[in-house]
Length: 112
Image 1 (cartoon, rainbow, N blue to C red):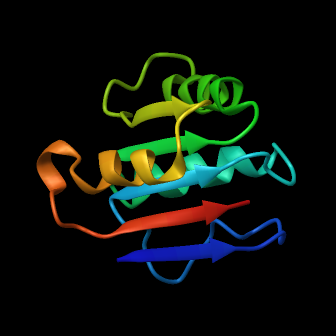
Image 2: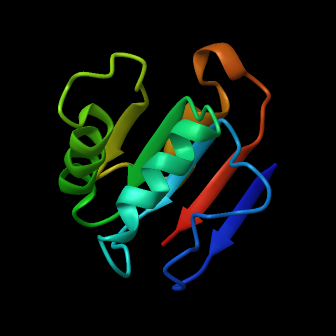
């Protein structure tokens, strides 16, 4: 099962329902300033995986990693990220579906 969130609204990541534990983030994003709130929502919702796909996905993954680490003083902040610049979407989806601890859990696609 894949759920999709699509919004260009600045608070798109501020959902009334929590994110799934496994996300596929499509890039490019409409506004990279949305990533701060998106990452915080992922941490709040205990997301375990953010797989980033699309042009420039490695750079967006690096931005997400930097947001997660922050100043490095909070060791409880953790989020696994991957980037998939040249992989078919179906391969990325399969990887997310079989992600280690949450096999069978839904995968949610996100577009910011």
